[in-house]
Amino acid sequence: MILGLMSSNEILIKNINYYVSKDITQIVCGCETLIDNEVIRYANSNNIELKVFPLDKTMSEIQAHNLRNESISDYANEFTIFWDGKDNYTKDLIDMCKLKGKKVFVVQVILPKNIPRSF
Image (tube, rainbow, N blue to C red; front, side, top):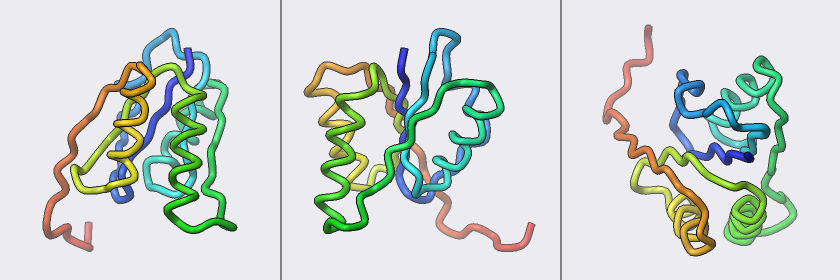
């Protein structure tokens, strides 16, 4: 089973294993967001095959996102998508996957307004 793990731009999830079932043989993601870095690390450290779909930088932003969303929605069997409720490209991917009859699990993420910069 191929799982697409996608997110809006500023979301970081540390407990990715919670969202990956045992029958997942491959994970797909982009390579632009915070969660993409965690997904790549997770797949590599758990010996899960990984396919990364980068944005095509030779196209306009809209064209690049549309092309990648189309490619990913065709490629993966099911999706876990972390969405802040605002990012239109993520919403487009959710809608595209649903139209194609893909299983989509949307995790609604609420970002804090003021994130302290010192930890």
